[in-house]
Image (cartoon, rainbow, N blue to C red; front, side, top):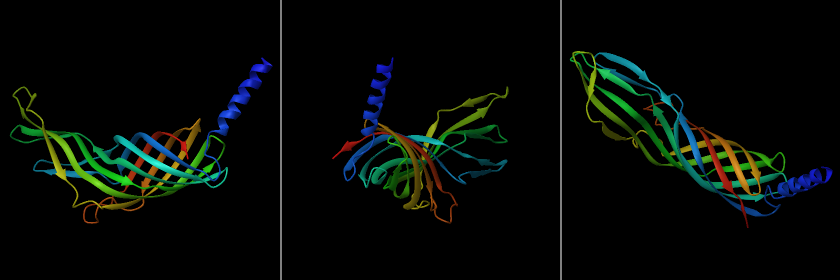
Length: 232
């Protein structure tokens, strides 16, 4: 048993030696994962002849990928610069409108898309050989923006049941309402084992996502990625 414990300890220590890049060396880290995005103050109001209500903004789950270049200053600190593609925005609540003449429509899969090319610049501190925390700034360029939803008309029958028609997908361009450049602040915690890096990151918009005439909303996102360190 004692020999087994010694062997496991040696293996663990050996693994931790490879948990981070070597001092004075550059590493390339490709990453892939998911982001859970939302916008602050993102709700909007629907005003019809017989109804007026608020539609809340919720989390939009989406895809994220990127690549980092990391330079180890010493055994505890590193500088990191990357390029990422992230799909941000929000997903709104479903709702329906019923008119006095017993016609109406429902709105489903109501998504605001704010897709960015982001360039995070971060300082990274290794708390242990495996765990690290990072903070920095992230300039982001908007590459795609629109709101898409499915609209489905219906007629209310004499029994009160709704007879739905075929859903129609509608897309509205938001490029004249959104800021082309947004500055974010990313904060992350990472665990690294044998060159594999698991990263959880919170990204908050320091500048507005929309032009002042539309709304005071900021991006807010949780991003989870898995990466692999290639040391050069």
